[in-house]
Image 1 (cartoon, rainbow, N blue to C red):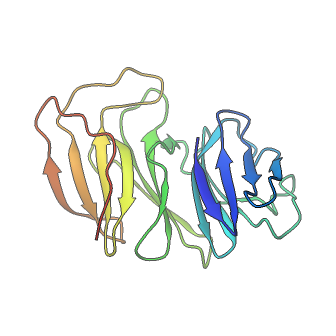
Image 2 (cartoon, helix red, strand yellow):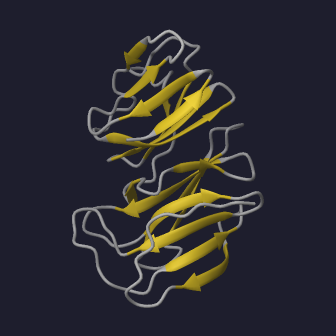
Image 3 (cartoon, rainbow, N blue to C red):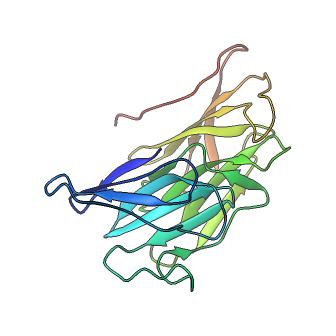
Length: 200
């Protein structure tokens, strides 16, 4: 499940159904959406920005933008609107989505079924353009992603979609807003990082 606050409301998602919900804590009103994109699965990442919600979802590797102020028209890909997918290389946005220091929406991914690896994607809110980077650390997934004032930070894992996780030496990564890894720390064997937070 993913939760975020936007425009005085709480927005969230749940497993399967590819839906999102809105809850107004002032009035107690709530609503559940229809599917936000054509592919089945669920929304993992959710970032509120300029009155819109930027979503990332499994299993189609989808990026979606939804404006709650406009009429719903997903059938014609108007609102919510699906942007470029990162499938088939990446399908599961397990590391969630964050607002990066460059004002863009960044997401960390696992690779497709039967493949070890993962990477990052970036949505430019001004243009809707999606950029992506695969296998920043070859064969390792992006386990969690966080944003600092000037850089992004991620931890990697041996997790995969549809396969047992494998052992390796995993990393803490410092990532510039051009998608390049500027520094890395290699954890000793047997250390399995799962979450991180950044305090600037």
